[in-house]
Length: 578
Image (cartoon, rainbow, N blue to C red; front, side, top):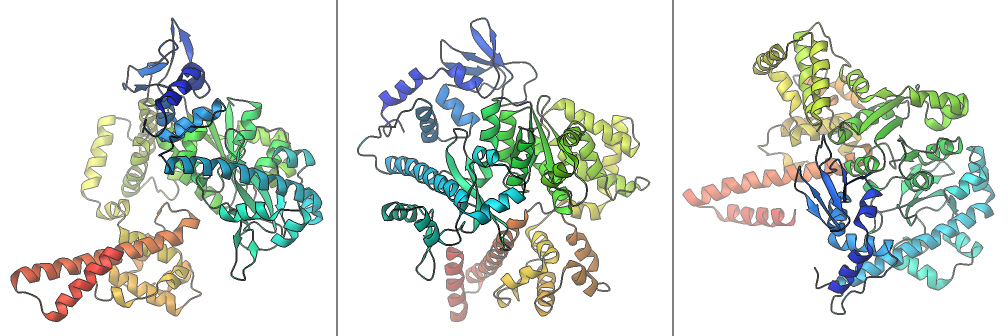
């Protein structure tokens, strides 16, 4: 890699960089003698064992032995590649990377990224100008209660209903238009017309930590589906790694005490307008582990506040499960449960900022929220239910890195079950595990179970299956049930899950369907269709591989007919192309 970026430039970057300042902007260091110390960010560290030397421009952990320079720290802490860490340091110092002449791809990628930053920023400014020139957009924002100051603070814009209208109104030059097309910021539709995917939408620019515009969220001002869309991913925008509003929060406070995570762009803006200036959004209901890491890099306490509908409640529970591995003695989460059919935007308008602050102060601790949810539907007078509770709770508890928190939650679980002695608790779990096959089935999800569960929970997915014939003679366990349900869904295209279960009420498979109808597959709504298709493809490939194995075994013993030889050739081709 050093041959691709000149060594002198890398050395110059490290010379210019003070590793203490670099690390201190991310984790708080304390001076101790000639060095600086803190708890290690790379493992669960009870006492400070992470040491940073100003003199050596080097860090080292005496606990996990991780070590390195400023570049290594960015690679390990920010999950960057080597090139990205060089870009990060170069950006801090306002330098361009002088790639060697014979290295084409890295140089091109780097300058393409810089050009993409520039174009995204330029069109963002045009969107901002356009919102002022468009009455319907201004009226929508005013009606939502967003002030002009907030429009400026969050750089809110608007994309006109057609590109021609937008282009003429803002005098966009053909050369700039061509660049936008080349970088796929706008596109050409089937009618050979230039098209902006955000047209007719309020634009919410998404910024990185340096304030660069990396992408956009768009909200329709008419009854157009979907209500919200985001930019497609580019080499500067990855939705799973972006936090909306974090740049604005950090402008006011580099290390906020809390970060309040809400679902929507407007929720962030309205709460900020009401002096709650530590609000961010994960760009939707589903948070990712990358976003959790970013949140905890910027604060020690994350407060999740989701909408009061069922989707919001389910999202909050999924979020806790994703967050658990990142909780420690110093890093924690809380939850705000809003009333039914309320979101942060509506409730702060009804109750006022002071009452919303009270909700924040009274947010449920992680442990209370955890047991509130995991106890749903549990009959504590039933030993089977107590065991089922343990089967569900313990894997989640055990993924927490902190020994203290794990022990604390296990003790609460034992008290709920009614066992105060640790030995008796372990004995109870061991005895029940050996004689409870149903719960063992519930705790394991095969591909086929997930596939059928998705279909039972979303019968309209049946329309995505283009051919049933290729599964008809499959030997894979569960295929007959899948095909049976698929046939029913296709014959009854308006069926929902309740209707499907009712259809099979007195059948032999009703208990299986009931179980799968409540299976927590942990797949977010916008990923259900792609996951369903991926599972179909995977199972079809597995089916081909089983047939391939059978034919290969037969060839070694009895030989194959001409028809079977053609079949195995066809299977090999299909597997290769799958």
